[in-house]
Image (cartoon, rainbow, N blue to C red; front, side):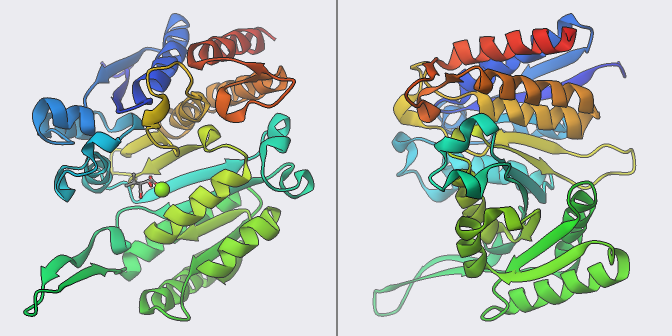
Length: 370
Ligand code: IPM
Ligand code: MG
């Protein structure tokens, strides 16, 4: 049925199921209003490993490929730390990214007015912060060959990882950044280590060439990754869109997340190429992890997951007004003083995962009627 909006739910481990349950309630809310979402569910991560001996069963991968739109919770936990590398929960996520061709990872870092004080930086530095990290997600040192640990003749060991990028890989991620910037404040900062890495030299040159040829209207700066890490805490509002490789993007997006006061607030989208039929594979997940220490206690902050669902509405189904509604509802709930434990401060109202979900739904109802 072409009217259906299909989504594959992969709750995963730890707090994954609890936060995804709140998204499920939002989907029900939309369905009651005729949106026709169809949700299927699969196992991934340690949970999948326990049941099927692999962090990403073939059937789940096939489903993801068929449906193309994935809502992802979180994976990982201490009980799986000692598994061989290829069986670790994280491999389920990495393989999904790779197999679905999700090369563009969008990680917004924005500070909600109500949470300005939750940041470890001075309020003036972060008030109104709204930056977007565009992280390359299917290349670089995460996947480069050769990689592995080998034994040396003298009994010692040697480990190798390979940082590798081709010009087409650099161009396609840079293009995503330039396009996004045009819809924002029109500024891109491209980040690498061209002072020490050949891949950085090629990155810088390729981004500049693409800019000069196709995006001369967008402001472009280049910055070394270490400087960028420093500038992010010194003057974060200087950035609009940051485009960078897989590993630097991993680090800088955690740092940017912390600027906002809570990792529990940040959504992400991972997008594939737009195909001939106009569709693109996409996976949406909170930036935070599986937080096994608080799993099952109704303490997790579902807002990053809920905001990831807003990104899904916007990027996979073109439902921008609906995405705005969800984001405004989240802002309203924060304004009203409701906080999960991770962002709780004196004078605000502590709520659990489920109640936070209820508050967001309530706000959506109110805002939709307004
Ligand atoms: C992230 C995570 C992952 C990564 C892990 C879980 C493999 O840190 O999404 O940022 O390193 O990409
Ligand atoms: Mg990370």
